[in-house]
Image 1 (spheres, helix red, strand yellow):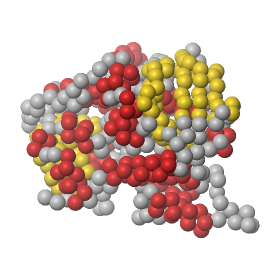
Image 2: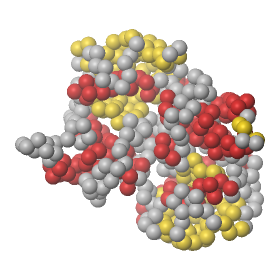
Image 3: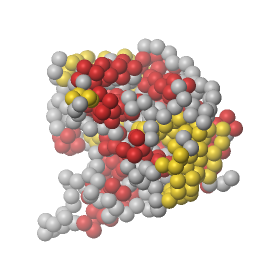
Image 4: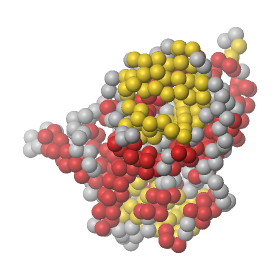
Length: 495
């Protein structure tokens, strides 16, 4: 599919989001779209996918002007959109999610479930997910597996242009390789891709050309082979970023958190480790290894069934997140949409919700203090928003992530757990989050970072814990490990 977008403008109220944007995608091309969070990437691709209606500008497909103003109309043109934020119905099966709105029917007009399950099984096999059953409920899948099912939807409609918005944010390295294989296979068949990602290595490996936006304006388009990372950073941010991973020197204090043989049936087994004040402990492992499940066990969202948790040397009982908060534990969860935010609430309400008691006296809330606190975090984390009253559902994914971080920082935790803290976050914001981690570390906060980006988790951690098949198989100083060694532990559990 050959796409030309020219002079695209879009405003929400009095806020101009896109101004005179140009984008061209050729037949059988992987075209990357890059920019910081709030640059306008999501708005542009939603216009192309029929989610939003442009205010002005033209769109032509294969040389023919189009005015598609609905998702269904764009799908009929052969455009599929795989959202950054998962768009699944948790209490429906994989097959039902795949065929939602386009169910197969038999000659009597009834839903043909056997044929749907057969087609679903074939797609799962193509994505190397043959171990999943079409009847499996979506809520039983991890975020990464749910993302792969979203990608399968695009394959189902035989799309000629597939928009992938941060498709690998929750995938393991193995699943990313599978996705890239599928992209290259479809590209060879003439399918075009618009690929949005903050992961530079993916952009250079997969894309043919790159278009960069900054603050809702078109900066330029270049051949991928003609630029390097520094060039792209300057185009996206207007500045260079040196030393992305700058872990500050660790001066660990007393043991802040200790797990003794923690276990939960089917989630993780016999997990033991210590975490000191002023230390960053990274967690690595494949999807399904149990990393996130252990964090939920510590925080009480999925309480552990066996073992002990000690905080500052004392055994504690944590059955709920409220219990964890009372013991100074904060948790930035992987799935911000369902576990980190109330999307219909504004910035102020989300940022101050966990610490609301500190803003109250005699049952009355100090509104002025709420405003001051929210503004402080907006400035500190460089959250791009029209105002503190903007609803979270109207922010970009990266800015939503910053709000999740802000709300837990406001609780002033002794122990901070960060599960995929930079998922869907641009390189500038990543640097800001790493700097915050280092600052908190210097202040004596004990920090756990779970990340699927091996370079990230090794770059910002003092020690690394590696999990394999729900067991912790290795803990070592990061400067004594290579990436190959970490992958060997993660894949095989071998010592």
